[in-house]
Amino acid sequence: MFSYPQNLAISLTEEQGMLLDVARGFVRDQAPIEAVRAELETETGYDAGIWQRMVDMGWTGISLPDEVGGAGMGVGSAVPVFEALGGGLLGTPLLSTTIAGQLIWRAAGEQAADWLGRLCEGQIGTVAFLDHADWGVPNTGVALDAAGSLSGGKHFVADAGVADIFVVVANENGSPVLALVERSALTPEAVSANVLIDLTKRAANVDFTGVTPAYVVRGEAVTSALRDTLLLAALLTAAETTGAAGRCLSSIIEYLKTRKQFGKLIGSYQALKHPTVDIYVGMENARSFVYHGATIVGDETLSADAEVACRMAKVAADEVMVYAGDRAVQFHGGFGFTWECDSTLFIRRAQWAQQMFGDAIHHRKRLAALLLDNHNSG
Image 1 (cartoon, rainbow, N blue to C red):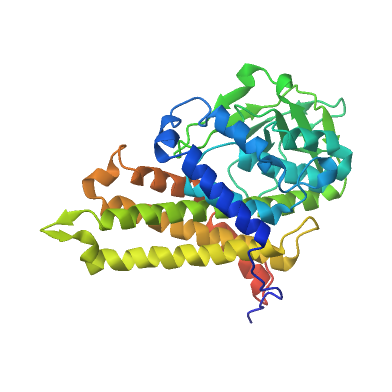
Image 2: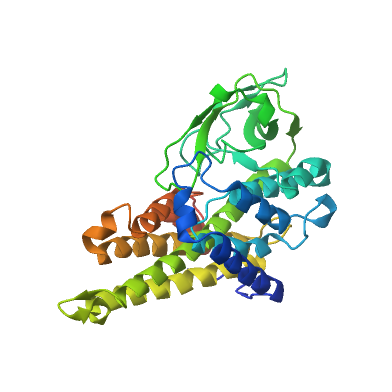
């Protein structure tokens, strides 16, 4: 039988509403699509001036407590910011830095206050998680030996090319640990850039062999922190993806209202109207799941209801973005397949987003165990 979550709350607080308005205004003023396109083939994928302005606005510390230099607003308050950034297809290291901060905070707390303070002040952090390409396995192939040295590498480390702090998920005598590595500890040859389908994003493979971490987080809290941070990363990615789906929908509607064929606006054809409505419904559905997740996640260990919320948000956001990106290309006809058309940016974002922190199949498999009486994870 189906087991309903106990917490179905959804709310947009006054603070979150203000953050959403400010972030949308920031994207509109600082990062029009022309500015985003200008960064697509640069080394970092973003403008350093825009990043600094985001730091100055305190966005790097929104989800961290004030005792480590953050704003103390909670991780749920980061959701509207990422929705707005997704709406601008703006690629910056904010997502990877926020995720790194959550992992360090949840595993080490105030013991790592100096590291967290650096992230709040604008240093870039990232989590080196994947040994392979599966978000559902332990990914602790990188080992920390008795001498305190790492061996092994990580794949698709987000923003590795610009990161100041690497949070490396490693194995020490069969137990997971977090090895915090300074940028200066890596040689240039250790970082090998990946080619991603979404050119607003950056990632690299990183070889940590021979590197001595500056700080190691051990203990039972690491396992719990890893679980919760991956769920929060899925939620924040879903927020960003939902924002991108909204931007994609706006571009479709604008095109339907201006493009004529056979003397008629193409928006008058039902074959185009119905899919557009489907995108709108899917986007609002995803937003509901995202803000439900934002309502119930907190600094404490995530509950079963919070896990359900994060996973459902990721499923809903992935599916609407994939559909919206595909329809955007199709509606624009031959032009939709060209580099000059913004539709290519949307479909590329869809392909990137659905693979990050587990796709719909990944999360549905785990939702089945959470929501059905049969608790076999399979």
